[in-house]
Every structure is written in C-alpha cells, then in structure tokens.
Length: 315
Length: 274
Image (tube, rainbow over all chains, first blue to last red; front, side):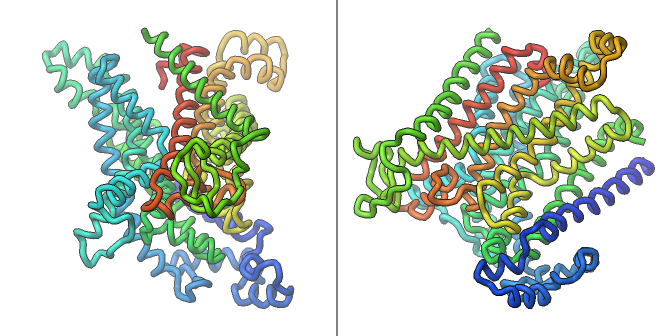
C-alpha cells in the first residue's frame, strides 16, 4: 500500500503541475489580452501598455507563471482588479457556500443511487427495475438548472413556502442550510440518474459472479449475500464514476448557484467574467481543477483500500 | 420482449430526434413570427391561437423562438461531436496500435481532460475571448475528445486482436490501411451510439452555457438563454420557463433513447456492457 500511495502521489503532483500549465496557457498565453479586454476596443495603445505594466502582464511568461504558482503555494492568489482586494478571501467566502452545496448534492445523489440501484438490480427485468430505469432516463434528460427553476416556480411562486433564492449567511445555520436544500436537490437528483445506472449495472454484474453462487450454496440468504458480498464488489466502479462525476457536479453547481443567486464560486466566476477580472477566473478554475484532481486521487486510494487487487496491479 | 423494447426506444428516440432536426430546418424558411421581433405592446401575452406559447417580456413570440432555438442546439451538438470524433478516434487508434508509453500518455491525457468539464473550459475561453457560440463549441468539443478516444482504444484494441486483423498484418498491410479497412468499420456501431449520446450531452451543455450568458448571444434564439430571460419574469409568467426547458429535455431524452435503441439494433453485444 505504501508503494501504491507513493506512486499515486507522484502522479497527483505531476497532474497538478500540468493542470497549472494548461490553465495558465489558456488564460495568459492565448492571444486575448486581459488589459485590452479590460479597456475595451477604444483604448489607446498607451493606456493598454500602462495597464499591462500595472497588472504585471509586460513581464516574460516564465516570470508571470512563476509568480502565480509561488503565490498559489503561499496562499496568495493575487489582487482582484475589479474588487481591489486580495482574491484569497473572496474565494474563501464563496467556498463556504459552494462546498456545503456540493457535499449535500453528492450525499443526496449517493443515497438515491444506492437505494435505486440496489432496488433495480434486485428486481432485474421486473416492473420495479423498469420504473427506476425510466426515472433515470428523465433524470438524464432534465438539465439541473431547469429542475431548479421548476422548483422555484413550485415552492416560491405557487406554494410560497421557500425563498426564490439568496443566501442568509452562516450566522443563522438553520436558514443557511434551508437555502441550500432546493439547490442541492436540483443538483443531486440529476447526478443520481447516472449514478443509479452505474450502481445497478455494477451490482447486476457482481450478482452473476461465482462467489455469489458459493455464498448462496453455503446457505446465506439472498438479501445478505447482496449486501455482504455483491455490494462491496460493486462499489469500486460506483466510487470511480462518482469521482469522475464530481467535475460535472461542480459545473452543475456553477449554473444552479446562478438560478438561486447563491454567492458561491460559480457566481464569483461569472461576475469576474463580466468584470473582466481575469486573475480571479484563473484562480477559481485552478482551484476547481485542484479539487477535482485531489478528489479523484482520494477515490483511487479508496478503491485500492476496498479492493487489494487494484494495489498490486498498479505497483 | 427485450427486442420490442429496443425497437420502441429506437422509434420514439428517432421520432424526437427527427422532430428536433425538422424544427431546425423549418426555422430556416419559416417561423410563425420573426423570432427576434420585439413587440412591447403585446408583451407577456398568454398562449393563444396567434401566439401558441404566448410572448416573452419583450413581446417576442415564444413558439418562434423555440423553433429557431433548435438551430443553435443542433449546430453546437453536431460540430462538438465532429470535433470529438475526429480527434478522439485519431488518438484512440494511435493508442490501440502503439501500445506502451504512447498508449499510457494518451490515456493519462484523457483522464486529465475529464478534470476540465466543458463549462470550466468555456468559462476560461470566455474570460479570455469574450462570450460566443464558438467558445461553447470548442469547450464542448474538447470535452468529447477523451470519451471518444477511450471508447476507440478499448473497442479498437479488441478488433486488432481478432484473427482477420492479424491476418491483414501478416499480409503486410500497414496500420493506416488496417485502421480504415478493418478497425473503423467494426467499431463504427459503438462510435455511432456514443456520438448520439454525446450529442445529447452537448445540447445540455450548450443550454447551460447560454443560460449563463456564455454561449449563444442575442439576437440568436437559444433555449438556454430563453430560460434565463424567463427567470426575470418568473413571478409574472412562470409558463415562459416551461417551454424552453421542455424542448431541451425532450431533445436530450430523444437522443438518449435513440442511442439506446441504436445500441440494441446495431450491436447486441454492447447491450451487456451498459
């Protein structure tokens, strides 16, 4: 396991370095120039040059990349052009909304997927299975932000039992959690559709394995065999897909935050785009990439912990 | 029974996809009203014979916008899927033919791109180049590449291990000839199925980007932007948020069903894998 961890950690480090290159390349090297965008098409070349000097854009690429990365490592994300304040606290504040939202949505989708997947696999080919699969088809087709808007119409416009959006802040934790429930449901239900299908097919595969027959022959009940033997074996693909889905969950959260006007990472990024605050966008994208890559690393390790075969194969 | 269900998915999915295509084609020659025509005196009109789905906050005919909105969805979907197919198939074939370091590098690269969903790439591109439908297409197309590449490598490697591929190799045929004569025809069904599903995902992604203002720009009608317009008048005209969303969901549902149906029809072996 130690060798496996060491190997995975080095891959993780290399991936993060490449990710930082990519983000920097797209945001800083491509022909669009932050200073030109900021000042608009009527700007004089002198004004552009002056702003470029102020933003440090006149430095060589290597210097700019080095400054950015060293800053990131020290927790110094630079200064927002539009807000005139350090970026780290801005992102920190937005994460207090986005992270709980993502966690709630993920927990909800995992719960739905596990329940739905086990139920459907257990009744493979029967009406219950068909009903679950039909629901997943609907979940795959409905955009999470439309579901969010529909829930606003139902709960805020028609029933008037929930606010149409906004976030009261964590000073009042109950109301804060309440404001995250509808967004988390919109995100979680749609994510659950894919995860339910993966759980179902992984479980069906596990149910057909020889060890299941052996367990049943030993007198283990069908239900016990499913929970004790089939489900743990089905968890590896489910966890892997959950890790891969995390990036999509974050993307979905960016959109859903905008439906509910939540002051999270998604809104910060979109406001920064309209403010032409390139460095904030660059930091946010890098942070999301770090989150996604780190989570997939954890999934790898978790899968190896569940299934020892994965350790030896990798090492 | 199962075959019948596959057939049903194929027909219903095909019908919905055909309706999407027909709407886009129809909008090129006819819509009930010009989709971008503003008519403030008749704003927020309820559905009627004159305006089937009513009018929006600027008095634009919603039905016309829905019909014309199919164009952007199809444009983005088709181009993004073609980008995914061209680069994905090429990379996947190279990985399947040249095992070892090259294969590892391509597959690691694919895993890496998964960390950047289309929305994130689009946000980066938009903040550098400003918003537009081209960014959306590039971002969604790039996100398609690793999915197609992984599928091509997996299915392509299986074909390469078959006797007829070995025979072709033994007969001295080069990798390019083998790829075109033996590998591609055999993996085409799997690619077609996946392309259909990626098309559906592209429509969802385009809608999300346009909703955020990062995709299609006014006056180009787009379902995603109609939804963000509708949100500003949600308390006065909640119905405006129903039609564009339903158009997105029905199109995606149809394409997903078509993908499932094609999978059953083209290659029964694939069914077990899904």
